[in-house]
Image (tube, rainbow, N blue to C red):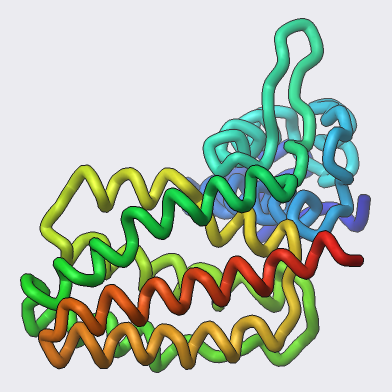
Amino acid sequence: MGDPVPLTGAATANGSASRGPVRTSVRESVFQALMTLLMDHGLEPGTKLSIDGLARELGVSQTPVREALARCESEGLVVRRPNVGYLAAPLLDQAGLNDLYDIRLLLEPAAAERAARYAIAAELTDMHRTLERMRPPLRGDTYEAYRGFAELDAAFHNAIAEASRSPLMADTLRRFRAHTHGYRLYFRQSIAGQAVDEHRAVLDAIRAEDPQAAAHAMRTHLEASRSRLMSAYDS
C-alpha cells in the first residue's frame, strides 16, 4: 500500500506527538493518504478495509485511521456495513452518473441564473480569483496532481450556489460531492482545460447580470461534463 505516512516534528510511529499542531498534521496526512489510495484505485472498489492493516501500512495508530475512514465515509468514498466494517465504495454506474447529472441540471442552472441576479461584487471577485487559480494539472492523471484543481473546481461551483441566495440549494449541491465521484470514475488532463473554459463562460454571464445566459452556460458545462465522464464506460 506504499510507504508509511511521513510524520513531522516530534510525532511518533503510533501517532502521538509532543505538540498539538503535529497531531493535527498526522490526522490530515493519514486522511490524504487514504484519499489517494481510494481515488487512484490503490484500494479497488469493494475492497474490505482493515483498520489495523491500514494503520500498519501507514505507520500510525488506529485512531487517525478511524478518523480518516469516517471522513472518507462522509465524502462517499467508503461505506460501512453491519458485521462487515468499512468497504471501498463502488464506482458510480451509468445509471448513477446520469441520475447525479440529471439532478445537477435541475439545480445548478437555476443557481447560476439566480447568481446573475443577486451576486455582489465581493462574490464575483472571489469567483474570478478561483477561476484564475484553476489550471490543468501538469504532473499526470493522478489524485495528487488533480487534488488542487478539484478543490478549486468545487469551490467555484459552491460559490455560485452560495450567490444564488438559496441556502437549501447550496447545501444540497455541496452534499453531492460530484467532483470527487467524477474524478474517481474518470480523469484525464484534457478534462480540466475544457472545464476551465466552460467555467469562464458561466462567470462572464453572471458578471454581465444576464440570468438566461448564465443558466445556459451552466447547462452547457454540465452536459459537456457528463459526456466526458461517460467515456469511462467505453474503456
